Length: 83
Image 1: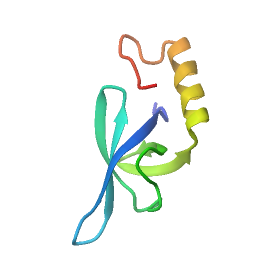
Image 2 (image 1 turned 30 degrees about the vertical axis):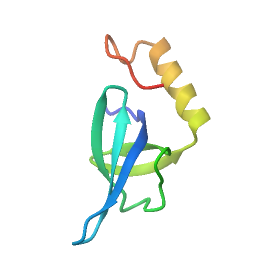
Image 3 (image 1 turned 60 degrees about the horizontal axis):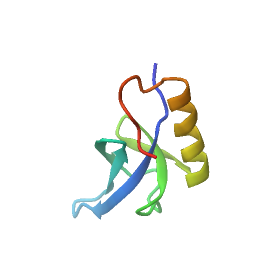
């Protein structure tokens, strides 16, 4: 099962050979995501990443609500997600 956990973009860069990428923070975890489907995302935006691609932009209020609900239901177990 795959969970759509909101992550916050902390850095964006372009690769000379083509492609736009971002560093996305999910609590203590940081992942690299391709922005091919959402090239207009900016640092500070929240996104849902699947298979290494940013697929959805999510506003901060919705991201915080989703994270709070996931915490409430124990989705993260002992791990804490970013607020």
